[in-house]
Image: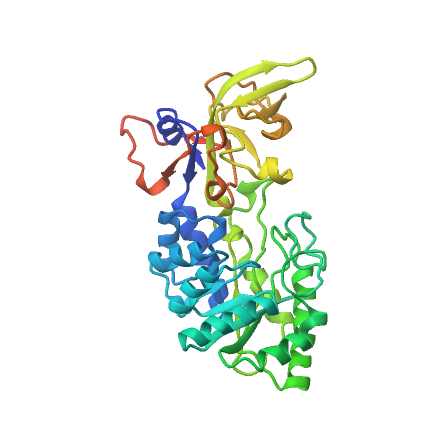
Length: 401
């Protein structure tokens, strides 16, 4: 991924910065479109993964919709040129202003997570003289086999309507004059690397569909299975693009559809995760009593995932790609005045020196979007592979791996 000429370009730039491989993004989008199109599945890109303007523009150009979890994300999708007919709006706490904006834009569906929210949407629909499309986000009680902070489909999670409340919700919604029930929605978690939770979800959806039809003669127009498909953080180069064919094929095999029903997905991390790397410069190698600290100029303000829930990213010294000996152990940390400002412990790398460039991989999702300016730090910059103009005097042959 990091050629010699790219390294020579990086070393002249102020760090830290996010580097996006736009050719990889294009290839990922092409494979996603082909795999989902095989079954006529509809994909809404989850904007919360990365809302970078240039990235969103490319995603929009491939014809994908948007999955939004805030009013500003709905605005961002509209401003990017994504058709409101391809925008879904999720979230447990939609404000009145957010609801009004989405109603005014006539979005495809509100993914509603409580009867209390649907009542408010109905009131505003009545005031606006509009029938508002709503999908019920149900909590299916399924373990996504992921980090506890990334699971969303268990009873202890705040998300979705418990299945035990389904009868009451249906009965109430059927009495609301400004609500049109158009679908059912699920999202069981994020960074899911096994397909078994999705198989379990399909089976649960099949049984819910049976209940909806037998008891209420309801056949939803669409079923939204959410997202959550994970990526390979440990060895990104071995799996730069997730196996979308296997993912969608598994859903097709296990989900039973009624006539004319359409399936929707909300993928984010799997689309952009491997596209980004955070490039940082080594400030110091600090010797401790029992360990060596590699202090970077990037910190938790630039990439919060490790500090927030112990996420691990592959860390590479791209200044020394040809080093044969990788037997130096470092705790890789940032400069922020917090003990949690650490990217990883006991990372094995070649001998590293002040000024070396380090790449923290797989940061295309939940990296730049979660940047903060705590301690008044500057925000990191951005570089795009297809906007770089190389010095022709630099050799182009050598690969850095």
